[in-house]
Image (cartoon, rainbow, N blue to C red; front, top):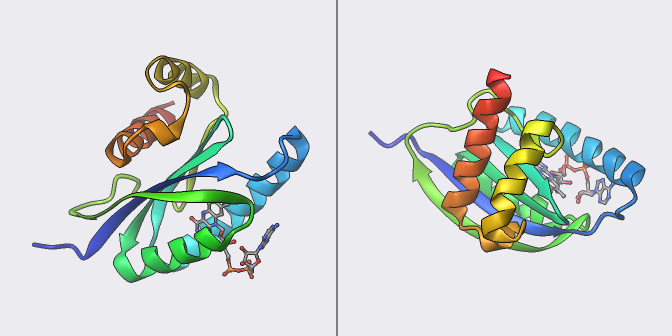
Length: 145
Ligand code: FAD
């Protein structure tokens, strides 16, 4: 039976200054706002930041996911937003995360190094399925840690 739920995957280029403190505070703001809005809209997912790019998975009711993506595309903190996938799903990959963030711990750094060998560290060279699988695997590792 169809769940009415969809998964959206995109990547974008970071426009926030590369100064560590500025970036950290912007990121915190983005995550805080995302978690409030996404909880309200029954959206779950994860956000990856890597070498100047964002990659994000959003999953939930189609109208809510589309509305969130509309807002996200207008955001000047990033640009060149590229939609990679929008597909119906049977169940969520991130049921416990209103918006998980991946990109800081050692385990992720090692994982990125491994991905870097094949993709040159650039999410724009990964497909929607690859980004989804990567974020899902990292989320499982994070929850197990
Ligand atoms: P308000 O918070 O009232 O903001 C109003 C407007 O101001 C919006 O257009 C917003 O984009 C802009 N704005 C607010 N603060 C800043 C700032 N510091 N710099 C520049 N512009 C600003 N939102 C979600 O709801 N869910 C997500 O999963 C999500 N993921 C994101 C991922 C990335 C990589 C980025 C860059 C943003 C993400 N956002 C997400 C934030 C999203 O782009 C909107 O800012 C947010 O949804 C707007 O929330 P609001 O309607 O409550 O508006």
